[in-house]
Length: 510
Image 1 (cartoon, rainbow, N blue to C red):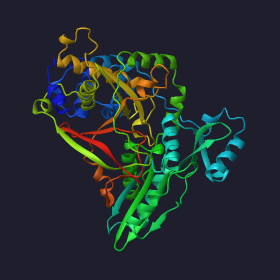
Image 2 (image 1 turned 120 degrees about the vertical axis):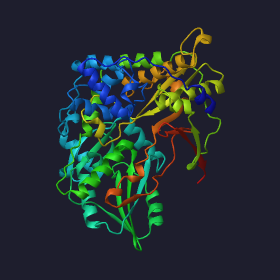
Image 3 (image 1 turned 90 degrees about the vertical axis):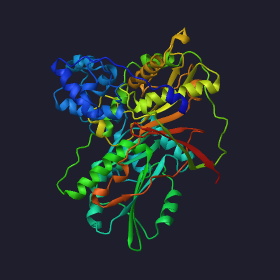
Image 4 (image 1 turned 60 degrees about the vertical axis):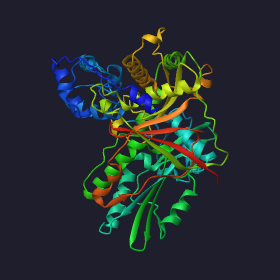
């Protein structure tokens, strides 16, 4: 893969200066968000080619809207060229911004009292303590149902050392307010016998919290790992561990109510609430995201898209090694690849994700004797036109297959240049964004997607260890509590444009 990465670095671009007010505004915002010189690109530039990705898009949208440009993440991925985006910005799709009232998404329930009674029984909550009930997303269903079969799966422990000068009572109050401010942290999930579906139940905000107290950190972490997240139970556990003079804050999350973006939002709000008693969290409600997914139209159009996307050579890679039953990921094999200097200094600045997909597809296709590769991508899923999606707490992640033909779809592969292949791979990766939440099992493609190579490419966050430091928290390494449901997967972190850190799982027995 390292040779593939080295061979794919190349440049060249034509620069046409911004002329219209919208073009000039977007040109300035792009240069700020992507941290590149405004002289290095013009109106023919492609957002993804300049290094833009879903995270950069989430940062860009609110800034553009504040500058008077009405655009959404969907607009950006549909029209990634600057002059095209500037042209359509006045006619962009209006984001869904209405507040979804409690129980609105369950209006089809024949009897709300019976629904409340069922939720109350399964979640061990009095009916008057329930704020809202609505369906789970498919990803939430997969996460929580897997945990019931594989205890500890999709669960993590976030451990922080508390400084000696922190006001513990004030901190606990701030965490209670954080939980009260985010519906995801007050959510439980149960499998409805009457409706034959997974439902999530939001508990009303409270001024109290069921704290767990311990006097031995290692013993607590071990006991906490042994306690799986079950249907109807809390999906967040909060603990204070006082061990001699040292104190630790341990919060255990289930992946059905958080993702990587959510963790940063939660910790930033915790800091703000600790430092300012008057601070108010303005949280976009997660039920707006669920509502959007239930309203997605043109399912047949998306199904046809995926059939077309996956058509062609159907060879896929199937790992020879399969972990034995009961095995758990107990270590990671880690390898770092440095980008060649001419890539780091290039004007192409292809997104690290697309660059990696292109290189990995070459390697995979070669290993399988095929002309194409299918990767199963884990995506942020925050490209949907839901207002405030960029700071919504809750899992929006999704997975989607990406098929890349190493001939770049050309019937004369000997004419394909490296630049042609990179552009093709980038366009293939971009094309799935608008359909990322609609990849449903299909008889024609199921055998392809089920054997695709699972991969997640994400930016390495050099500031993640700093979360909480502003109020005296020192973060330890996040610990995954369970095992993966995949036999094999790759976790790739982009090291600020300097290279890649590749993590592969290693399994141990019970």
